[in-house]
Length: 398
Image (cartoon, rainbow, N blue to C red; front, side):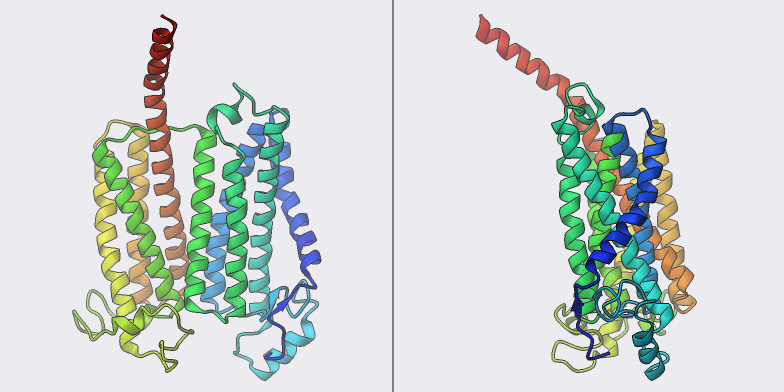
């Protein structure tokens, strides 16, 4: 395994063709469902499908990490220079024989490669989305009065930014493997996946044209809770990548103490290898306890913030705001229950996956809330701006 080149680009063409073949399934579904519709409707449908698959990709990425399959194929982008574990059968067999419970087994190799296939498929869909958006504008199908122009004024740019970001996310995936699960890179990879989900959610809401009107207080709470959510996701990624979930047993105490001994300096040293301190020695348990406790404390603050935001949205008569409030409250409870299950039940796979899915769900709901509120604000102020422009024109004419 140590003699395997970390980067082997020989299977890149075959992997690209495979991703293209897989991507034809959702693309064909979108084309069949949107027959007779214009380019704008097809791009909107493709955005929704890509959003759904990105959510699945995040959850399956968590499954890959939680089953210790991140190094199931020790090179990138293929598996021992092959496009699938089938072509790498002899190499995987040798590695598994040498270390039956090691990082490379047939099961782990397949899990890792399926994750890569899904990631590349999402990348192909985003590429198609970007190309179709630019072609739509160039051909005039997104001209004045059409859905693409009226709903998404800069339609080509959102897919283009998303395409750039998915390339960056692919690089994070590469360095996750080549740097041997370096905690900072793995955490960045998780955050990158969530950011990709947020980008697609903004586009999805923009295409749908849904708007909300928030008070200044509701807006402040929405932005504040969303910012805290991203901090908590980063902390959760740091807990998971450092395997600090079981550093504390029991709840609400940690290892029988309300405030156990903690080493924050070692715990939050970013530039270090997995299981090592900044100086290269084994990371002490007190550092893992610090990581766990910070995540636990911020979780309580975030839970309270989500409940307050849900209450403020529910206080309105608007049915859409009330639905959002129910989603926020439900996901907050989901996260609290799944998080406690990880600690009390010893980090079972189902609870860990549920926790990751809940985090992605919160990103989707909070991003949707902010995107619709911004669209509502622009819609509310647009007539005023138009009246000012008309008034200035009349004064110049006179």
